[in-house]
Length: 53
Image (cartoon, rainbow, N blue to C red; front, side, top):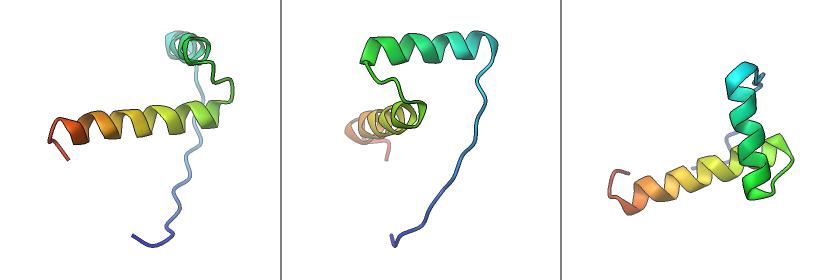
C-alpha cells in the first residue's frame, strides 16, 4: 500500500456534533482528529473480525 494520504475536513453541527462530543467524553479522546482515527480503526477491526474485509 505505499504512503498514500487521505485528507478529510468535516464540520460537525447539530445532533452529529452532540454525538461526537458524547463519544469524545466516553473514550476520553478530546482531539477530533484522534477520535476519528480511533473510530475508523475500531470499525475496521470489527469488520475484519466478522470476515467482512
